[in-house]
Every structure is written in C-alpha cells, then in structure tokens.
Image 1: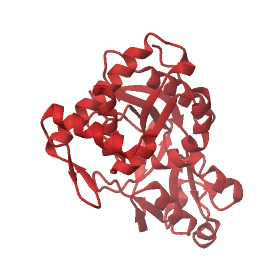
Image 2 (image 1 turned 30 degrees about the horizontal axis):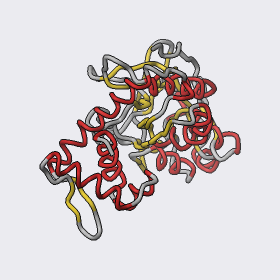
Image 3 (image 1 turned 180 degrees about the horizontal axis):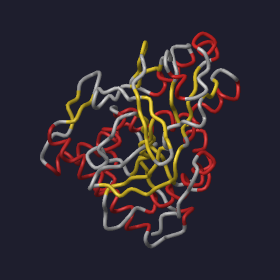
Length: 307
C-alpha cells in the first residue's frame, strides 16, 4: 500500500471512529487497515490515534496530519482528473454541507440522480443550521441561505427562495385572519432565535423597495427550522418561512397562507467554496446539478460554474 493509500486509510479511520468500520467501508481486511496505520505511524515517528477498547480518537499529531492529508488527497485526485476529464469518470469523495431542512426536503431525495450521473463519486452530506468552517472541517462546498459575508469564500448565486407568511387553521380561527398590516394588532408570532447571536428575528415585510419590521408578542420560540414549523403546526403563532419548506403543509391545509401582499424579501441562496487556484471538478459538477435541482424552488437561477 503506497503512502497516499495509507493516508486514505488514516482519514477513513478518523471519519468512522473505528478500525472495523473503516475496513468495511474500504472493503479491506481489518488486519490490512491496522497494518497501513502502523506503517504510517512508523514512517512519521508519531502516534496518530488514542486507542481504547471502546473508541478511537486523534492525538494532537493526528489532528495536524488530518487537515494536511485531506488537502493532499484532494489535490492528488484533482491532478489525476485533469488527464481523464470525462465527467462520468470523475471520482472521489465530495463533502457538502447543507442547511438541515434543505438537506432533508430537497437535496437528499434528489441525490440518487446526481450519483446516477456520476457513478464514481461519493457524497458526504453534512446537514446543520450552523456555519461550518469549510477549510478547517475539510468541506468542499456548502449551500448558504441569506447573505454570505466571508472574504475566504467564493459565493456562486443559485437564485432566491420566495417567502410565505402562514399559520395553522386552528390559530387563525382563534386569533382571526389578518387581511392587511393594520390587522396585526393582537396577533402572535412564533419566535425564531439565532443560535449564533441569541437574537430573535422580528416580523418583516416589504413595502415597495423598503423592508419593514415590527415586533409581535411571542409565546413560543425555536432556534431551528424544524421546531419553528412544528410550533406553527401546533397553533402557537404566525411564522415566515421559505415557501418550498411548507409547500406540502399549504397543499394539505395544515398551514394557511396569510398576507401574501406583505411577505419578507426573498432569501438568496448560494453555493460557497474556499478560494483555490484550481477548482475541483467535483464541485463544478455538483454546482451544475444543484442549480438545476433547485430551479423549481427558486425564482431565478444563474449560469453554471465554468471550469
């Protein structure tokens, strides 16, 4: 086993947290995985993992190697693919981070199509509502909703998610259906609290080119989209969400749209990736695919990423 393959084994042990799982995922004997790591540790003269009967964790030297090794393997795969540019032969692992609701409702159900087009690719899908550090955590690209404020990232616009105001029929029966902003007195909203800042988002709407906001009474709040929508379904107040996220609830009648003339501004969605001299072909292919996949859910799409 050459040095690059040893590094691949090392990274798979790190990601899986287990020699047994790493061997299964790599389709290698357990003894081969152990031997590859032992040879790598002997060559480097350091211990890379703390090993117990229950878990495997990186040493300080292992953490330092993991970041460099991931970059090295990515660069090597990209170099190899420059000489076999057929898209259906592009191989390797693509690490993507996506907001949890987009991952569950849009991306994961459509992912078989992407893997069918590019059968030699593997996708590691991370889903969370936090801003991951793409470089530090070894993520190739991410979908970000809202503004992108980072000098270390390239942001490719994919369009905008239209917003909708809605509430459950039970809530509207009890509180009344607001027909214009003058009817908002006496209404209650479900609060959405940012995990990063701890601040609660106000109720927002557009008046022409101006963005307006106000504070409404809150009886329940949430810090993630899943719980936020669940609170609305339970009749706890009005919410403002991307339309795609509750389209099925609107169609079934579980939620009812209100004030369509006074919605918040659409939310921009971007594909972001770290600045690099040579952009991975894997990211280019994913960008083109995800752009088409999101087209039916956004009000505008943009030209595909060029090599």
